[in-house]
Image: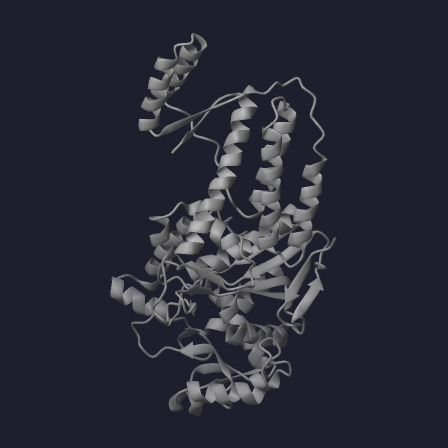
Length: 470
């Protein structure tokens, strides 16, 4: 079965056909690095990391590029407030992004390009748009002629008249006077303050507009046409709309074949969209100090990427409970494997392949993570049924453990094997086992209580004594 992707541009699911066989060119808009990322940023990062992982699970070689916007007005203002240069501030929060997303087991991008490292290419790109008549210089600024691009508004599904009316309301009079049309957007911004970071260009000392950077870096590192371009739902307009216009105007080629957008994170009873502009955001770094990172990863990775994600206490509790179920079956498998016979032939476990097929069918349908995780828990029940049997070969147990790990790898969820016991605890468990063999049940019960007070719970099963931390 082929993967089907909901394409925002066509507003329907389409069969995924990459430009190159078994290779994927994928660009995802990264953060503007002026602060720690919030859980909304993390949702987008985890959603597309999960999509990337599933493509790799299906055998694709994914060239995954995600940028850092390391110069803009917010960065300049934040740098002044923190007493840093814009580059120092950007470096600080790029590192923080890598640390925080690394804690969620997000794979590093194939490449993380930065605006300041690609300024020469940005200036060249803007110049090409001027030469083609799609852009014009005005008092040191450079603007893109939106109405000259016939498909402008197709991604967001809005008419030029509607977009122009909205733009007229947002733009102040001084900027309007410099534009031919209120809908025109900035490619290059003149900087008049000599203390602000700027670059020389044919038009003025200045810096690039926000939208142009992604067009330049996406085409530079992935080619004129991408397989997949992703980002948050809030980027459909104007950011992605403008990327399409300026990219296709410059290259005369389709910019991206599939446009993917993840849903918002909402908070509270009213399910209000979370954003920094509304002041109702939750920093990922703060959550990492409160919760198991894998609980956060589970919560972010297992909701369908296009659906809104409601963040509240109930959602966290559900994620905690479900992750605990996964860890428990993994613990039981690990314990049984240690005691299982290595010479027994594997038992019939066709159910693993059947469940894996169901998993791929769910994920092939526009990366439906919620349905995919439902199949994972079907696998958990299947494994638990086997673990009730006395004689299960090591090969069978290992096959089950490997398959569970493989499917959870798609979601980036790590189930660490139970940690090694320290010598004192291990000695007590061994002493209790010996006491029970010698029918000294009083001493056995005494040790069980002692271990319980140390946070170790014992469970005597037909397959031996199992333990877990509580």
